[in-house]
Length: 464
Image (cartoon, rainbow, N blue to C red):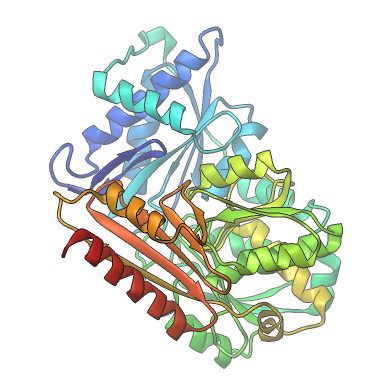
């Protein structure tokens, strides 16, 4: 099966049978459930509005048409941003005084995937309780469509490239003048999605010369769209060839940001947030940060260097945002290149990340590689172990927590074990009998060895 329903939306591959892939019928059903939920939350509101935007996937126009017309059928007014980004829709919802938003994107998944990502009236991802209500509407098929005189109104709004970018440029810590004086040259890999529209426009506004690679928003991804080292050979070579100051890589919906140093080496997806946080904390004279349990310890080190407090949250953007609000965090996010800057909005935003990083680089007097080398050197290993369906995965995790009870153990999301110089995080999959294993240490060899030790211990506990 390639149809995944969760509290944050529905995701699947295009084509196939109803309930097994993301078919038109599944799309309509889920959009109707979301619209019904929105209407139930706003019973006394005459004009309910929802913002819709999409990435450049081949299936995007089809899915958008299904979603927008379903909402119109429910009597909801639709503001369609067209080709957009996840953070742009998040920014647009409160600016339009809308009651929710839907982003049509499967994020870093391959081109055959698409998804509906759901937002509340704040432009933030739904919490567990809200997502559960929508799933219940789906199960009950409990929809009430509007009479012909009460259908919703469809409006296109193509102004949010400029509006979002202006929001970024208006941020106090975005130093446009310093960036213009630096006269940077960068290479951009936008994997033929909407980053190819938004990032060059931002760069032009900041006086940065941009060499475009895969910036045609046609949805034909030239490589695996997840911005990992093994997928980024072309931009690494082009950065060196063009003698660029660094390279920028975004995923299809532009909420993850990876950077390439001037010598073609990876700055490291984990270090995007670290660098941006270092800049913000340095300018503010300290502050608190949050990232999830599977993110690099480097953020904690940088935060404490500036006199702030670091907090680890459960994995998932909504969990990170909740922890950020609880701890009055000035910047946070996820180690996958997701920068969340509350001065802008509570969502991962590559445009904000690019602007903060450019400001940091321009004012630091360092090259991209020198900046990377100024941070603690940590190395990660990411693995998984396939189990049989009859095994008690929760019991295995409990046994691992007991095994390491004399260490610092966190069980808010699987089992995280913090050792003096490294850590281990074990998480179970919600859809299949798999335990994901994340480790970090002072060398790749040590991180891999810790992961293998965990695999061996799990096998011993499971008797396999």
